[in-house]
Image 1 (cartoon, rainbow, N blue to C red):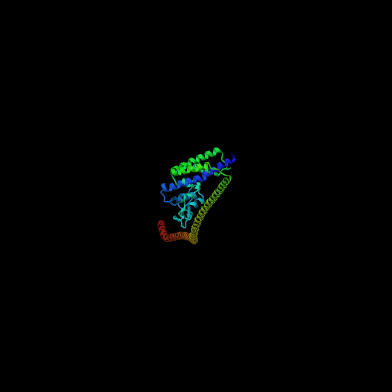
Image 2 (tube, rainbow, N blue to C red):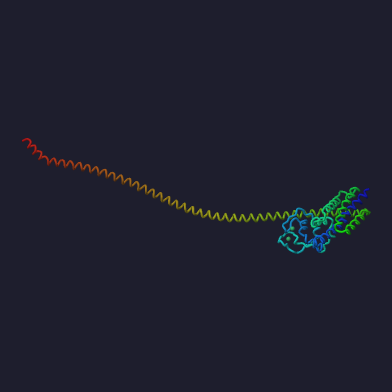
Length: 344
Ligand SMILES: [Zn+2]
Ligand SMILES: [Zn+2]
């Protein structure tokens, strides 16, 4: 019973890992030649370089950023060669300008995962629902905890994958459809010996390890890119800050110079004010002295005036007496004469 479960797991794996890629490679070839009117797969890859590059790396020189990068480096390297060109957009990051589609590229180098990626992204019109089914069953088998399948699960998996891959083959040609069907029939009746099963299981384990490793490397590369980006940003802001500091420092020097000039002018003005103030004090003192001297003079003038008036009154009085006396003297004989007359 257990041996049968193991054989079923082995057959299902062979369907997904051998038959599916065979048919999907024909789907890609047919699409590139018939629908995309490319001269060859290399020509088709060249036309879709940027699109596929964004599955491999998040950013490129075109400025567009992708959300997911499901393509591993080994997958990218199986399709493109590194050339010696520099970026056409003058960027210094890894970008499609630095790669060429491999002239030796044939769909045969693609495993089932890469076939699904290519069809999903650069073969519009091919039924993605079938691709989804193939990928889903592939992942279930590769990531299974135990390498066994019971009859029910096996039949479900086989039927779903068979329908998907046959529908895709039918859309290419009846020849491909027939070939695919024959391969599946052969697989269903195939005897799986224990050695072959062990080898298959080891192959899957190795592939899974390799995929995990590549995922780690890809994540590390993403982190490194992110860090590089952040360092570049920080360095830009440091340059900006330095520029601002230089500007501020120049403006501080200018301001200091102005302050020195203003301070010198203030000193000069203060000195002048002090001089003017001293001169005002001096003038005030002189004015006070003049005013005192004017008061003194006024007093003296008043005294002189008073004295003069006094002397004048005295003089008048004296002169009056004198005149009176003189008149008396002059009148006396007249009086005596008149008295004599009267008495007689
Ligand atoms: Zn791009
Ligand atoms: Zn470029």
